[in-house]
Image (tube, rainbow, N blue to C red):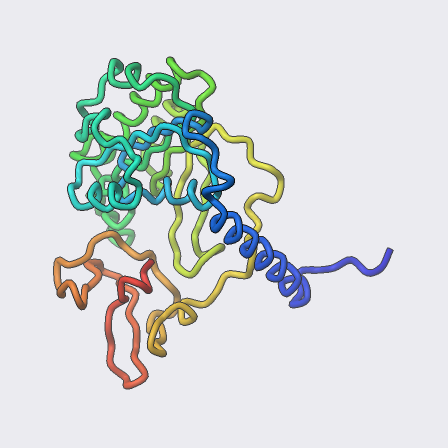
Length: 287
């Protein structure tokens, strides 16, 4: 039978070759999209809460997932403008922009739903508000100004499930398993989430929890290619100053300018230029 192939350099080379071939096939399918796309009435109807600029929808697009009706909700004008420009077919008016105003009647009026996704704000749950040295904890949890939107997500999902018992769902957030709210989330969403860390698949540390009702195949969590070093995606010969890549936060432009934004966090990912100067990440590097 031959010698079993271990996860050596040869293994990763073969795997990377297969991934490249799959990527080329994906590009080919995308190029022929007008010929292979299904009519919208044949696609799955999708509802996304806290949509932002549409990352979940973009993921579905890259998978050539057939989308029928697409309902999205977000309170931010800039994020919604990006979404509408990128996905003009998105319905941004059937669901109240303020998630707290969504009612069961709103959900019922959408008709049949096949996929539900939500990513409620994590600002009242994130460990950045926990001082691990002193134990001082400023996280308000589900009782906070934005944390309560997680409870609203649970409520809306209950309505979606009531009227669409076969609907698939994914709810994404940070990992807050040291808080009582974690157990409330598990009770409301049907169990413990799947936890993933982007460092195992990409370039930076980012642990996220995904509550879902999907059937995951064996080996789903194996990275397609070895995780890369952050320096490989820095432009103009930049190198990372940090010993390891921290989480890239969502807060920018509290300082800096549009041309030279600065990450507003206690632990930014800093870059050293070939000339020895220090700078923050550029937008294209963060993406």
